[in-house]
Image (tube, rainbow over all chains, first blue to last red; front, side, top):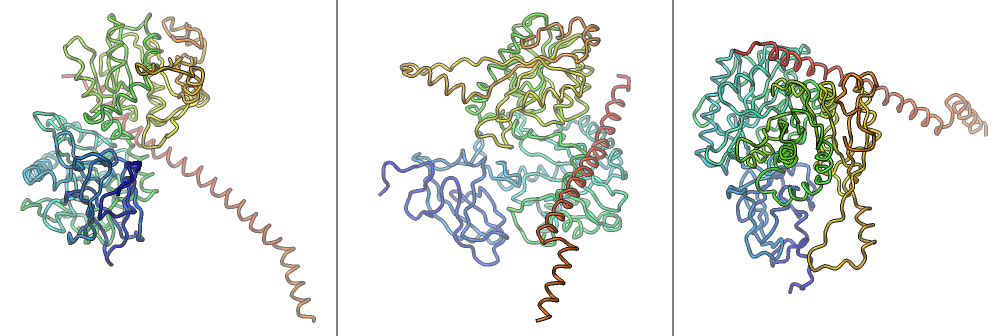
Length: 568
Length: 71
């Protein structure tokens, strides 16, 4: 009998259930000896694979964060040995009172699995043979195109592993991995070459998402819906002067040139691809000596010194970009509404800041889905307003509001790149321009802020203005994974701005008490106001000014005219 | 009777030279902390030097594109 007051959000309650499992975590009571990886299936569809080599049973394993919103309704939850497919345990579970079957699918109904990054994605086995054949065909063409550029491409990562193990793509993987062996040994030369390679691929018509100087992702979209169907990763590989082979972001180890060249050949579904001369050596460096054992739940753990080296040499242009792409993807409307509400007061403050005296060009940096950009476009009919963001999904969403040619323009801008300083030239901006950023500086890393300060200084030097908003208190449930909960302190911003010859005038932003739902009477208005104030993230507006008077005097149009403590 | 006295004297001498175990541990911990801080400073410096590679590469790329006349 299920008591009516049972907490459905945290218990599974049907007969034959594993009584210790909950919707927060999965409990594996026992595993057969020598099990190295298990697949978790919902109604026999694989959802998640777990590397259990170092797991001590019974074990309580948290469901991945991204999976939790899908844990509704009921399902037959089964755990299988990844290698043999043998069922280890199975039970019917109900995650909540919903009558539906649990569905881990995207908006088109395509099954999703937890991928090697702990995110939900479409695995190759769910893409179907047709898409897999397309990936192989496209990879073959790409290899030829890279060869035509005078490069030495070869398959790496999961693609090489699948080819060597079974002559096919790994069913649990989600992409194809191709590297080219650069002749350069210095990271500067390797990066410059990689930028050139990326542009050459763009000229060939590829859509590229660049994760670092040496890692780009080629996106292949559905022609009708525009959704990404699959992607192919392209990496630069190179020997360093110390004789080690490098293939950022993960591979770095001892390898002789004769273990690399001349390339051998591997076959994927009957199509030949170049591979390192000694594939065993490469796969041992990439994975470990046990690479022959299939472990679908294997998680790449890049050694800290390697990660640190590669991130500094080649950057991390995609810092939290997956978060924002997912945030602006179609299926997260409710979360988007919540965060848009968090940014409303800041938006109003910036609109007021630029209401008079705006420059002919206004750049909305970190525009997201363009709510502020559109509002600026309406309130500043005499200005050209451009929304800028590094998340393709944000720009796609913003563009859907454009409607006609009269709306604001949206362009890609990545504050983690020096290239961002070229935005005014790319947009043919002449004369003064303004910069606004609504809750951007508090939601990016310090490398990104460095270029934001430079861009704001450029705006002031052009005779324009720069203003931004930020939360001065973090969310109560703040996590590293969710930048919307981050904050910055005024003192930190003052120090950072000073390093760029800038100073800041702060203005605490008033937040109106939210309206109560219709029919609800506020019996304790003072207590409600006090609670609201206590929980406030305390948004603040900041006007950016030159730190020294001579600068200000040279730019009569600059924000230095404005009184500290108020909007520009 | 003499042996324990000799041992006690030896221990006393060792303590005078090395200090008490507590002192020795505290000294080692302090040295370790100093070295840790030095390593952190060196690592941060190395990070900056390595990051210069990216800055230079991006600047070269930016300059090449900026100075290439449009067709």
